[in-house]
Length: 324
Figure 1 (cartoon, rainbow, N blue to C red):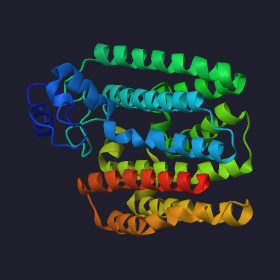
Figure 2: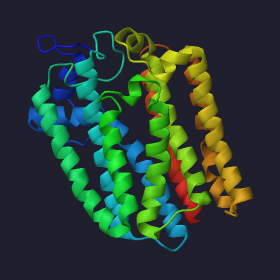
Figure 3: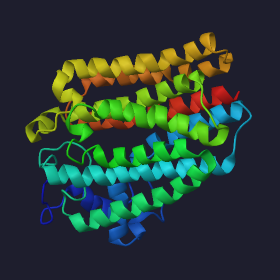
Figure 4: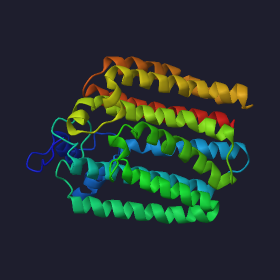
């Protein structure tokens, strides 16, 4: 994507302001809003938000199955997860632009700063406002869950900013995959359960693992697509370190392990057979495996979107299986 493209906007940006054909909004959606709001919606990257909701669904299902469901903390966990995801998206846009990682050769979705749609000051204000809202939600969750939630919340807030920012950005040193697995899988599921149940156990951690694996698989596709441009910009993702062949293998391993987890929950932790419901999505997963080996360049954008859908479908099925 262009580092400064104000005079030559990307075609999809023009289309975004003229129509509502992306399927993300209804007839009264962003096309009818002031242009600035449309830009902020684009910056928040709505299609990434289901990845924030998935772990909260699973964590809440686990609390429900244990008879510990609490609606207010569950809703606050949803709000907090969405705000942290949006903050991370804003921070990635900001810091990748500052570090020169967003270039004209970028194959992924539009970044608003690189496209010249928002200034650094605008994005700084947006990041501060989003972080402030996340802190407000966090204060409530701390009152519910105590000091462990304070520690988890502070770590999550810092991680959202330090993924691409700070003196040692995780995403630039091959640690992005681990960061996503830990914070979008283990921390998000276990944190959601904790604020409702007051504790966690080994089976909660295991149920969190496949959620984190599938969300990590989304990042793997992203990094596979961007290997060339990331390497050129000095962004050393894990994909840049291990190369495209092993990155594709990593994707397959993550999917396979995600589908082993329900078997372990069933056989090793006494969950009912309904916990195997995620296997209904195996045909979709198989298609994703085939596509990761056949898609190249911008074709990987469709694989990324399909992997995000698979992640949500899997989490919905796992949540239903846990409740049943």
